[in-house]
Amino acid sequence: MNKIPVIIDCDPGHDDAIALITALASDRLDVLGITAAAGNQTVDKTEKNARKILEICARTDIPVAKGRTAPLLQSLHVARDIHGESGMDGPVLPEPTFEPAKEPAEELIARLVEECETPVTLIITGTCTNIAVFLLAYPHLHRKIARISLMGGGAFLGNRTPLAEFNIWADPEAARIVMDSQIPLEVYGLDVTHKALIYQEEFELFRKEEGAIFQLVAGLLDFFSASYLNERKMNGGPIHDACAVMGVIYPELFTYRETHISVELESRESRGALTMDLRPKEKREKQANGKIALDVDRDKFLQLLLESCKILTAERRKKGYDS
Ligand code: BDR
Ligand code: CA
Image (cartoon, rainbow, N blue to C red; front, top):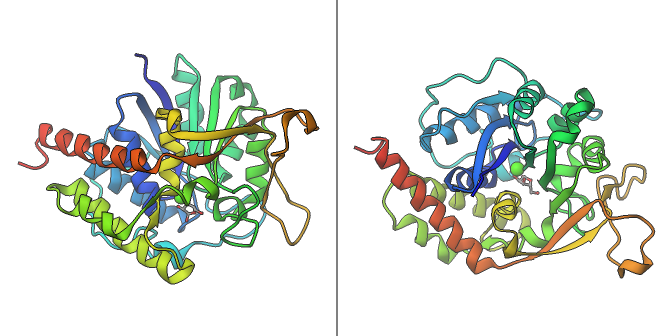
């Protein structure tokens, strides 16, 4: 089977890190590159965190590029309350041994897309700033983007405001450019990501296993779930960002609704909310530009995360990382 070429734009981030692990473990994906966004923390921090994840996953061959330092129009607001000072507080990871790419995120994306023989899937697990800049700067490459799978928003549900979710709220203009690009969209919002939850009592499934990858995920879950308990009164960790990766590999895990999806910018109360029409098809005024996931098979999702850790643990051993 041909692998799906993907570029992941992320802001690691505890759940971004688990999303990267899921992508790197999959034999169905070819991860061409990773670009870092400002979001959960400043881009200097998220970029370094991305390289730390690649280092521990023994994939230092994948290029990492730094994205924009700030959203398109508004100022930067990071998610220190959820992800801590480093953007990935909790587990202590070794310093990366390789340098980031010299080119900025949008240039790396353009080069990788141009070089790839088949259309590339873009996966966004942070703010949409870098991908919006890429889409604006390289309109001739839109036809080489197969689709955009992103974690963000919700069906009339928010976490930063009653209606806006963090990734969209943090740069709504960028999200609007991405959603209005006419490239097929797959959206994983809070409706589904709050169901992709790992409960406190399941953390042991990771902790009891040997190896750096399992221990990393256990450490990420500890910190992330403590934040969610404090800030959002939730038991466990919703692994938001892994949904946007998992959906590309295993769409059969999710229940989707096709609709027209965009972003509200004008109203003060609902700025950054997703707009969509979930009425019966014949009632809708706009043609669908994508689909939003509304449900997930949580048990399979958890099994696949465990399986991903197992695969990368074996890879590390094969490459002599644990000897
Ligand atoms: C999203 O915001 C970030 O804090 C997470 O990494 C995720 O991408 C959830 O609202
Ligand atoms: Ca994220």
